[in-house]
Image (cartoon, rainbow, N blue to C red; front, side, top):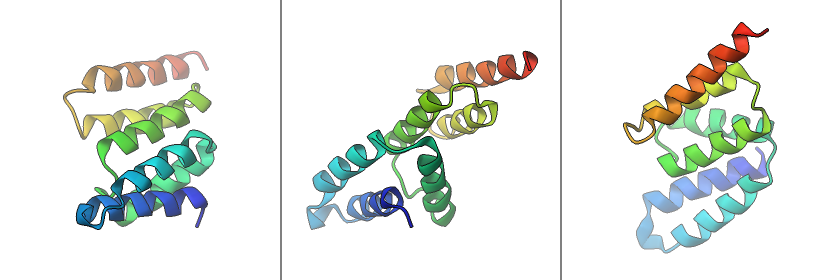
Length: 112
């Protein structure tokens, strides 16, 4: 298990038990770890943590993860679609962004 995966699990647990007083520290650690993680590590963490519990991470943590991965791999049509699909699960606030990601993925495939 990667350091980022462990951190994401800690965040999920802290949010599930806010009375434990660990939320602030878990959020700080998650943001710090994900900021410098590779796209591959981010995606592996999302796959593992969300595969165990689809609602394990709050939308803001998922959005940040996908955003950072997409910034590292802006020409990965599959990643753009995956990020768009995740955004659509928590809309409608991000529906325009999701539509833009899907359009970018389509454009990339048309130019291959």
